[in-house]
Length: 190
Length: 190
Image (tube, rainbow over all chains, first blue to last red; front, side, top):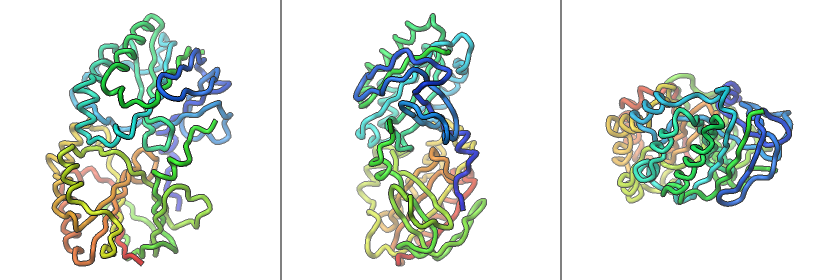
């Protein structure tokens, strides 16, 4: 008996393939913490099955999933303010894969929430840049992938400075002390 | 470049294969909610890669992962009281795969925690049966599997009644209103 539902595979899993084709041109791949990723010219984002597709220089996989720390009031505020990805003016993007330490994952839920929001203000910082910078989070901690999260950001060129400011703020938080690997990939829509 | 670390696959993923071989004899497979699972005589529990292994009537996969709701004090209490699986006297076991509704997964973190513990006392109920009934949780919500969780319980035969009492208590909680599929598999160590 096949216990995997192929439809759910198609709906949940997204692949980010750095290679020779794709609708986003890679302008920079910078290692922020730990080992970087090999150079590639284009990023192909695709959902579901990649069997038979052209291989990339690297392939990263993540799933959209339930909220892990966001509380009801915060979610309402996010929904009220945020913009979807895919806006025609949002031709700049960043893909930021992150891995956190074993020490992070061994914390209890309230300890992680306290660092994530009470101390570091992760959600609060993100909200300051809405709707200009839209954001989509993919989880991969349970998928045996090299990273724990892939975060995709999209914005219009006039918000490039705001974007730099936002990532700088996040990287100085206490939460970021648990980041053991981070790569910063910048892109332009083709 | 291969971005998957084969070592991490080996360490994280557990397979529960219902078939003709295994160190646990299946004594019952009962559907509790929704569709059950096909009959099988033995359960083989294995970690990592199952390529080339004998196929079963069904195969369920899960990963051990970080705590999702448990807070620091609760975790300390659990660590203080709980027993590891694999005790020689614990020859009875249950494998209970569960799927929760879309409505559950769309709740914010504080809403799920409130139902899980404040209203339903999931952790509190489990603690009452420690160390007699040991428990191990495998996550599969992000793995495109037919279930969201696989919970493995082990206990000595004299705690069989206590075990029935515990699952009965859990199944009458508000949390269980979100369970859309549940199968109850009972086993004896070979």
